[in-house]
Length: 86
Image 1 (cartoon, rainbow, N blue to C red):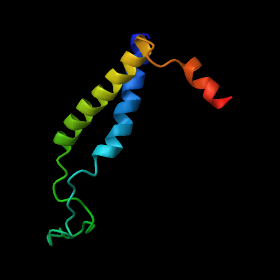
Image 2 (image 1 turned 180 degrees about the vertical axis):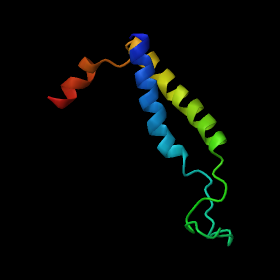
Image 3 (image 1 turned 120 degrees about the vertical axis):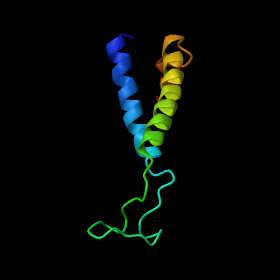
């Protein structure tokens, strides 16, 4: 696997896991009874984006490491999976 391919796969994994991490711990302004005038009541109070990006990076690195080990050491081969679909 080339470096460019690895970076592209990591970026896709990172982007997909971002959508899983973003809703963690979100409290809306309506829930806190502190709606700022001119904003939506469903807007988050404090989204903690720095923590979420850090957590997302760790999670996606772990997922990529598992993918990389499976790919490099051929722990699961596509040929092993194909007979199940025939």
